[in-house]
Image 1 (cartoon, helix red, strand yellow):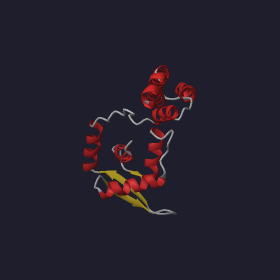
Image 2: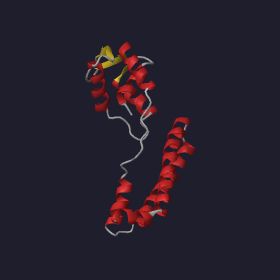
Image 3: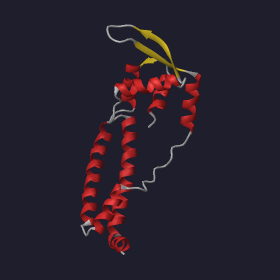
Image 4: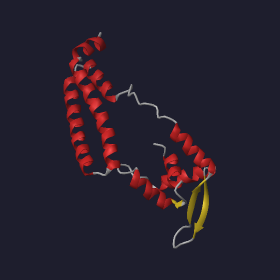
Length: 174
């Protein structure tokens, strides 16, 4: 996820302080990984330097000054370009799990046990996501569906690999 573009998009509804941006980000996107304040302010500093935001006002308070940021026309154009650019599909061609299976076969370890352990972990995670989905709002349900669909694909791969383990052993040890 592009944090900079996300913060820019949040600014399109109106100027905000860094604290408000963090809170909005965490509310909408950061359920599992909230932003650190330092990340918000370093990102805003970079966006300011690049002319994508401007300081809309500064408020003095009991602590440090609070800057209120507003998106610029260049920032809006940048967000529009980012939104219109499709994300590259992630083909997982360098899978750590595949590496573990091949190494297990190369070192005469039980690759089927690794597959079984991984399958159990995937199922545990899928149960947790399904429960979260049941209790969540629409945004949470959609995020959980995305993760569940990927985990289902992984499970299909685990089953296929388990069925082809003897052939894979022959291929990698030849």
